[in-house]
Length: 452
Image 1 (cartoon, rainbow, N blue to C red):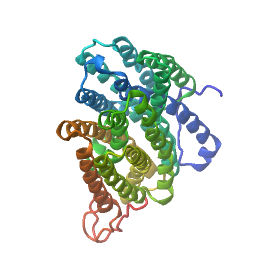
Image 2 (image 1 turned 90 degrees about the horizontal axis):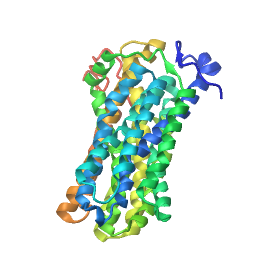
Image 3 (image 1 turned 45 degrees about the vertical axis):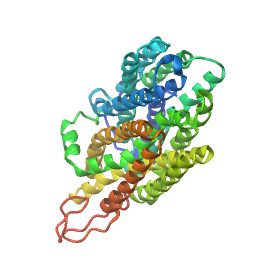
């Protein structure tokens, strides 16, 4: 594989000749190394979901302390997604991938230093907060890859990019399982990741590109923030990715607290759901490309609601086999929905471009501009769902001694997501009223978002 040029001045993926002759090869190469860096970022972000399993009574932390710790790690990972999104336009996709990968050394080395009994909870909390920067890699990676691929390929490309990153969650859990099984400590786990971070940053420097066409555009950020669809899609992404990352942080703790599993027993089970949820995400994008993201998202929320209802029963019946089986199903559905919701974003803004009378490259440029800017906001708000899930579990265990109360709240939320998806993107608009695309006078054709 030859090293790329550092900056590409002309980039037009919607031109099929350009795409076939050289665009696709370059885009795929950047996708590969973007996935690698994002994958490591997810692992570092979610490493505290594993580290808390190592932290037995000698660490002096209560279950409520651990849920609070993972909630705060998730919170930072959500917040930093906003500046990470715009860093791509400021520094270039390749350049920021190098920097963001290298920054992962800070929380990893810090955790390696303090991970021992006798360390105060406030110190663990501070180091955990630093680990949240790993969550930002997702936003910059998705914004970067969105610019490389044509609209017709975005569902697959974004799904593969995000799925490859998401799989960092089960991978670090699997490595932790091996470490625990070999009677190793948490420092062994952290030591494994330090050289991997260096490798990811080095490969990004050697084989990725910057796109000159991705300019720093503060106007795009303002326009995206003013658009109602940015916040509607943020809400829907809370239900999919918020569920995925929240459950990934909480699953092992729920098994320990509610079902009395040991760290090793919990580790044997926790990786399965995130693994399958990550692998299915590109399929969600592919299905959205084929059948429409709104339709797939709608059906997906039906499935998530049904699975949650069964989880409530399993939690009340204290049936571990049923609980674990259905929790894995819920992970799979959250991953599928991650792919379908993210595919909707560029489709929505492309439809808005058409509604404005734009066509061809002008419409594509409009769609890329707003969808790229909105992805950071959507990704950040969506990740906040993980904070809510961990706080809900914390309160449920404090109030009821089990996670049942939290699952009831999740079921209600999925029902609301179903209603919003149908009302905004699938219900046929009546002539002469405001539609999902904005104001639609009777004389103008009504836009349907069923295909986004």
